Image: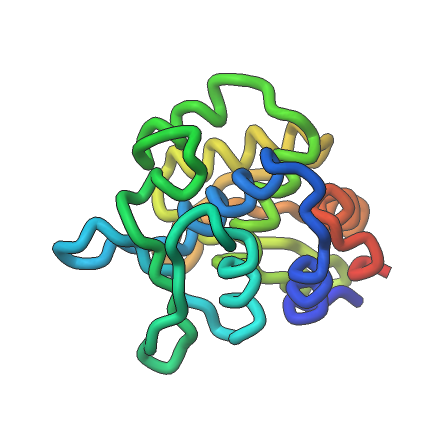
Length: 190
């Protein structure tokens, strides 16, 4: 049975083979876990575990100023500069969000963005005898992007509201396995 911790651990060990995949994973982390720092133009991303924060620091290494800062019962990474500066391709959050669904992306980029979203705001849960993956979304546009990218890797996803949060869910062992394979955690589903 796959668990959130096991899947996250395997995903953080997944090598990022291309710059586009690195950019997609960073984008996923910022969309779903990033919050603007008051008055500075920086972005803060909170993680429950140190090794998850280290993943973002490793991905942004030498491409953008990022460092670990004290957080309230969490590990917080501060990304220097405006929200869009980390990927170097798109300058604002709205431009990034509107660019992803407007074009077809490579399979590896879709999996990488899902990986970033799952690492920051995702969980695995049991649904009776089955399993499901949920990712909490900050807004409707980001939920739409995740659904579209799931379709591109051949996995059906649905948007819904859960406990006051907008979420995207992939249900069923076969679909969850395919999603984790796209994200790079093939053995987590065994």
